Image 1 (cartoon, rainbow, N blue to C red):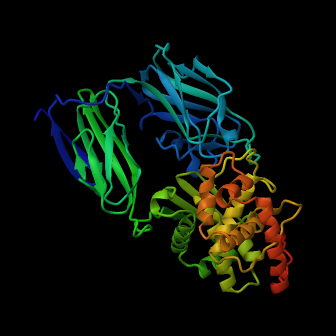
Image 2 (image 1 turned 90 degrees about the vertical axis):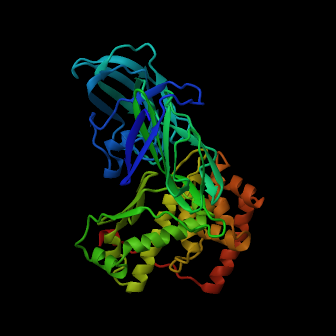
Image 3 (image 1 turned 180 degrees about the vertical axis):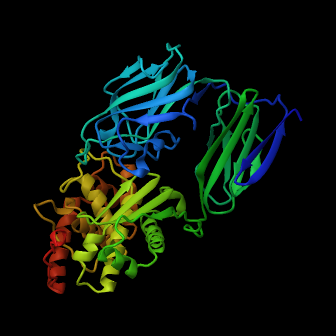
Length: 511
């Protein structure tokens, strides 16, 4: 055995060797290596907006995370000990609000970090969708630098009215002779016992391969293109380690394979890690919240699974979150959801609990907290539509989808008893959002299609631009305005039968 190398993964020692001359069946592919390593010094002129959207996320090789600053412009500086000659660079758009994407920028290099030379300038750049990577070649660049910087400016004020700048990933890459591990598979979602074909597409002609398949059969392989089956449902990680005479490269993709059991479609459901990060731990509102729900992690897990069972049909369809950060804070905003496609942020106001719910019994407070969890966690797991205008405000399809569906899921789960159907205000009808739209959609579920919630959420993947009119035509073959007329009759009968009394809204913010 001419070459043997040892790999330590998850406390398991694996030794594998192979002959130096192993035929690689893939066509040659030139490799590019990211010059940003653990030793690279990275600085940003503007501070990050939140801990989960920090500068490190820009270079974590995960397009589901992002770096976000509360400023339309920013300068990012990268310093390495050794000089490199860049041959291309890549910028990946983040998960939301296209207006936050960089539009204009300049890439410069420096030997000493003081005198800068412009390498490339781009203007009026566009990213066709979320999570897409734009690549820029620097074929004529032959100068080596140890310092690089990007001066960036965002596209425009976002649909949310902010002037943030966001980027999911940046890569500065140079040619390399070392292998760059990469692979594909004929499917990333599968049923148990399906045969999955993995294909090595690594760069620079590696001649040794070691695959590690979490819960797969076989669990490891030294073939270039192995075939694997999974008999255990769940989200399974895949690792590929390649080697040539110049070096070794490792690629780990967490939860790459999503495998479900048709007989038990929710077995193996992945619960994200939950972090409780309260900023208010002294108010009466906080103390009451944790007294009525002592185990918030358990509650979040319970609601998370319930939300996903409404929006999807099995575990393989569910978006994959790494972490959920839940924060109680003393705020005038009742509740909010933020973060990115990897880490979800949930905020809940202890001021609301203390002031608005002060005269309510504990069961009512618990009921309201659960209702908020159903609504906000739906925001985390629902699809996001692309509409004609993407306006997040009352009267627009984008807003009414997000907030209407979130309340639909909440109402369908039974957390609606403090609210009643209504016809909206200012003539916005089903585009009013929140409970107005939520009760309308629940009426459709009960009247026309028990599977409507799944179809409604899935419709944003096939309808572009998305609208209520297009969605109702596709799902029910009905005109949404005709449905609304039927619904107004239902509301009239509901009001006669139940005689709901609209409570005066408490000014809890100023109490």
